[in-house]
Length: 173
Image 1: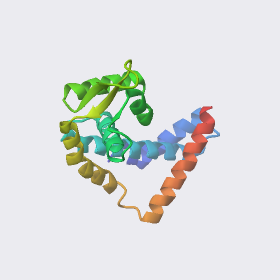
Image 2: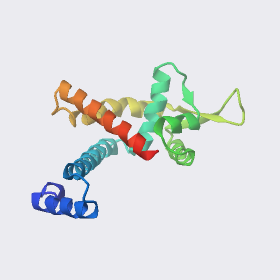
Image 3: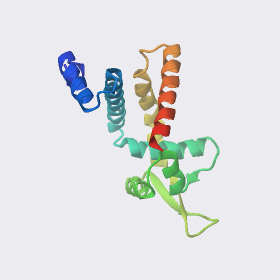
C-alpha cells in the first residue's frame, strides 16, 4: 500500500499541514495530494508508453506537433519559436530537444526562405514513420487511464479541472 493510500499516515499528514495553516480545509490537502498523485501516475504511464519508441514525452510532443502541422495543412514545417509556444517551454529547452531529435535523424532544419536568419524544422521520413507507428498506441494507452469514467463523468472532470485552472490563474497573478 502506498503512503498516499495509508489512511493513518494521510490523517497525520493532514493534521501536520493544518497545524501550519489552521484555516486550511482538510479536503484541500486531500485534493492537492490526490491530484498530484494521479497526474504523476498518468505522466508515468505516458512515459512508459513512449519508452518502446525511444522517446521522451517532450521529444514526442515536438514530433506530434510537427506531424499535426503537416497533416492539418498548416505547412510542413515550424520554426522553433512556434514549437516552444505550442509546448509551453523555453526556447533554450526547445533548441536542445530539436538538436537531439536532429541527431537521431527524426527532424531536419531548413533555412526559412522568407527570412534567411531563421530556420524551420520538419519531420524526416524516419520521424514521420515513428509518429505514425506509435501515436495510435500511445494515445490508446493514455485513453485507457480515463476509461473507468463514463462520458458524463469525463465531461464533469474536465469542467471541474477548467474551473480549478481559472482559479489558479487568479491566484498566480
